[in-house]
Length: 434
Length: 191
Image 1 (cartoon, rainbow over the protein chains, first blue to last red):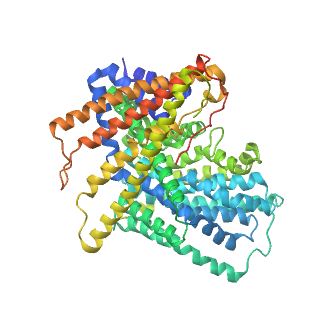
Image 2: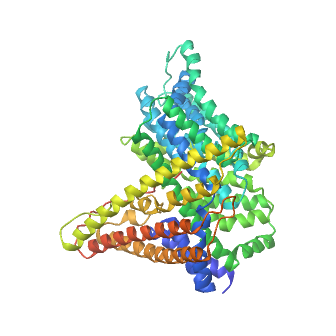
């Protein structure tokens, strides 16, 4: 059987299992193991099944994922998201679309302490959407703001998604994390400009709020930035300076968030247990997908599929940029139907060997993958952020939320385009790391 | 759980099994949470002591790896019970009643096949590790077999959870339980 035929058959089997509703991790593992069994007999299949689960999870570096999720959960419980929103609202609230801009600003700040975009969206949604509606903002516009602003948590470090990509492709976790900062900040600015633009064009959807706070209060609100400074210094400062490893920075960040929780007198067993449970559950889901993905990619490698794909692309004589653009288009469509972690793990065994062979910078490609993954969580029909926000405001129809999010979604496309044309937005900072 | 409760010896057995497994998942979940908490303190203390006093805690790496295996693998079944393993619900969302139960039975069966094989393979690996006297290569020679055994146990617990789900789906399919016609979430929690 030729590698091309094996590739097509395995992809068809995988898509069938996914369509039947088998979890993504199970589907990839099942196809991988069955494929290895058929091609190589029971020996390689049982050998890999016996060794991959342990060797994947028993890894010091993998501690980063639960620690970053835990840090965000503890920081939210310590009231940091509320403080971020209060500060951003004090400074931006009076501008046209100011409350929407405040939600984006607060999401940017909170992204610097949260590794999970779903958690960040839920937290910011509960804080800001009702407030915006109270001041006369259109429900769809208010909800749409949060849907897209939540994606900043996956770009601005710490980011579980960036760590996930780096671990799967064997890239530097610290460089991958720092590379998300530039695109994250560009995205934040564009989203704020979009909010301002919508408010100027349709004042009835985002009426200007007058005399919200005095200057004195604004200056006083800056005090609340302190805890963010501590966490950013520990995590980003530690990683960027190279003083601590990423694993250490993630654990120290979680510990600092725990201390902030104690200081804020919000610590209680239910709060701590909830934060820990959420971190374990998300990590468990991600690790199992990594295990399934590794079994699947080992099977593909055994069948010689990545090599055949690389050779086929090389004979086509196309430019690396056009290959990357085609990949991004495929990911945009896939993202509409799949969750981001599953999509990345499912496509990387096919795409990564190709882009690597074409000499594409793996960190730049990683940032584009994360951007695409985050586009997937905001685009219907299966956009997780849309459903998270819908649960917060059940009286706002999903169609209104999608309409409200549309200008912001366009900004995300623009960010992808900018990073594609100007790779330095992502690569400048990691290029200066020690 | 996603199934209705009803009368009959099979359903009663499944209800009891489910209650026992839920208690088990809760206890193991608590253990997993504690393991994560210890990892946070352990890694931080190791880093702080190394940078301030140049005295890292020997064995942190091995201990953290063991705790991580414990936290992750013993929570696999709980994550499955709470629908935490992400799936694409395009078909199951559109089905109700017996077709939906049949689909659930099929996916649970496929999961059982996979995790039956994984339990077997990881168990064999743990046994070999114990017999060979496999140790970690760090400063402290930690035996590896307890971690490998945890992997196998976690996989076995997930197998049991899937067996329960298959039983529930089968009773629904054979008419011994009532169909709820419930709709699945479009997508599960993701980072």
